[in-house]
Each structure stands twice: as structure tokens, then as C-alpha cells.
Length: 417
Ligand code: SF4
Image 1 (cartoon, rainbow, N blue to C red):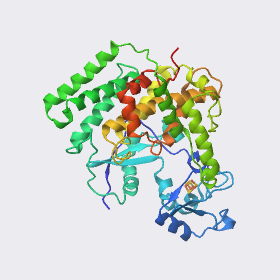
Image 2 (tube, rainbow, N blue to C red):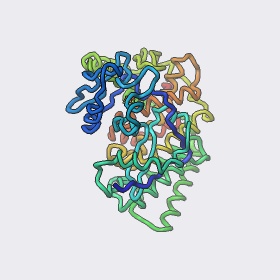
Image 3 (tube, helix red, strand yellow):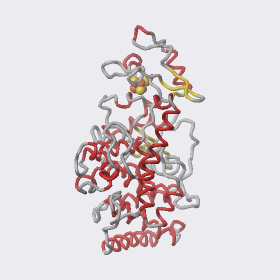
Image 4 (cartoon, helix red, strand yellow):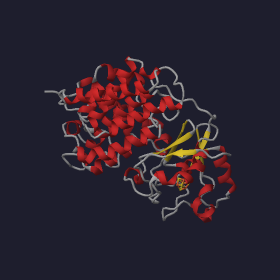
């Protein structure tokens, strides 16, 4: 099989540091048919610390890995090592374990690589630059994209199909420039991106090509920046915006485990109670564990946002990886257009800042610090591809101007007096 060429995000490092977080916590590891057969052929025995009768469990119409009583994978040994890896090598592990936390998406002649930021090494930017690992990533990309048709078409920029990959990617590169520009703080850069996209859509500039059009696109970015610099930035989101933000926080913050799925009735009731509390925003948050324990909504929503010096570099790196790896649109994100995927990222920014306040309030801090932001990114990114905001919710937030307000206010939900 021909191995694809890889485009890796700039400024992002990652190596596996063997923390084994991804093998704990009752997380669902789904097996392909080939994974299942390979593990059965490995002939595990009780003497090796693995119960063959419970190492693979049914999961809907397929199968998943079994768990130890503490929620660790059935193959994790007491030293935090994978028994399959130790005995048979890396290639013998299930596909999901081999690829995690990497993601790969078609990008024309190349494949765009990225990372899931629920991995502690990814969020902390530890290890080897991803851009220096492109050769070793090629076989994993081929594995991840196996079965996907060749020549996947580019996503739409707005509603109509894009002409070709270069036409589409020029819009991605511009959004990358807007989100990394140092003229504004990150909250205002989202506003610049949203306004720039809205103007480009109104003028249908996505249908035009040529150097003159590129100049117009640059000027529109400059105009958006100037208009933001000259407009008031003390904006408080209204009740509806705060409520819709909380609904999205709920989607992103919960972490469904195998234990939850085996007690579905109890878990559904927990979700219903959580949904009502997040809808009303009164009383205490539910207990989501791992630094997200019950605190009063008012304590979260009256807290100042983190200092931009702490938050912006970390969050900019996170969102740049999302953009560069195309993990926000097309096959990388529920088939969404570039516009709707970018709106989803803007809402994710507000969600992360809300979660960072929740984490800080749990720890008794009065303002989120870098640890709170890292924890919030890890929590929100875990559900990035599962808990997506409905396009209608995004549209409504944009029509009401609320998505801008949430970004300007750093996801803050303090009620207006
Ligand atoms: S199979 Fe190995 S790598 Fe995969 S979750 Fe289990 S212990 Fe971790």
C-alpha cells in the first residue's frame, strides 16, 4: 500500500510518556473484527494476569476491550504497561490504541495529522515536534484511513461544494492567520474570524479566485480588526446565550465510561438531572469527577476569566492544531462546512473557559490558572468529536450576536445587573 505524505501542525510536540491515562478510567476501547481475532489468537491465560473469558466484551453489534474492577483495561499490568505491547510488540495492539492520540484527515494530495488534547503530553506540548515525525506517522495514517475512498472531496466553505482542495485550503490558512495574529487577544480574534467569514459569505468571495480576490480577503481581515478595536469590548451575554453555553458545556464535560453504559437507567437519570441543572444554571453542578466536583453555578459564573497571558498561548496552540489538522470540518468533523466548523471552534473556546472556572472553583481558586485551563482543554477535547453543537444552535447564537459576546466575554456567564 502507498503510504500518504503527512502535513503535521507547526509548534506542536508530542511523544508517548507512558502515563497510561488512555488505558484507565473505564474508557470504551472499541475493537475492529481484525483486532478481536488478533487478540483471540494471542491465547491469553489467567497465569499471565488476563482472564480470557472477560478480556473481550460485546459492545452493541461489535466488541470492546474488557476492564479490571478499577476501570483499567484488562491488559494493563500493575506497572502501567500494556501486556499486548510487552509480549507481542506495538503492532499487535488494537487499532484504537495504536493511533491514539493522533488523528488523520484527508487534505488533498496529503493527509493532515493532529492530536487529541485529552492526552496529557499533547496538552503540555511535551516530546518531539510532530513536524519532525512525519515519516513515522505515515504507516499510522494509512492504518487510520484504511477503507476511506481515495480522492475524498474537500469540505464546503459555506454551502456549495468547494472546487478543489487548494481553493478550500486557502480559507483554512487564512483562518489560521486570524487566530494566531497578535493584534488582538484570542477572544477578539474569534470575533474577527466570525466577522470576516460573514462578509466573505455575503459577497460570495469563495466563488472567486485570483490575486485581486486575495487582496480583498486581506483587506476584509484588516477591516474586521479595525472595527473590533474601535468597538466596546465589555459585553455581557444574555440569559439565552448563557443557557446555550451551559448546554454545550454539559455535552463536552461528561465522560461516559463502560460502568455508565452497564447501568444505563441510572446513567440516563444522572444526565436528565444534570441537563435540568445546566438549563437553569442554579444550585450546584453535578459531580463529574477529576477536578469537576459540585460547586455553585454562581461561583463559576461570577469568576473572572483567566489572565490572557496564561490562557492565550495554550489555547492558540490547541485551536491551531484543530485548524491545521482539519479536525473541525468535513470528514474530520461530522461533514460540517468550514463556516459551521469554525463556529463550533469559537463555541469550544467559550466552553473551555467556562470549564476552567469550574476547575478553579473546585480547587478553591478565585481565577483560573494554567493548570485549570489545561484540565479544561483535556475535558472538553475528550468529547470534541462526540458532543458537537447542533448547527441550529450555532446559527441561532450567530444570528443573535451571542457567539461574539461569548467569545468577547471569555465564555463568561455573569448575569447582567
Ligand atoms: S490494549 Fe494496551 S494500549 Fe490498549 S488500552 Fe489496553 S493496555 Fe492500553
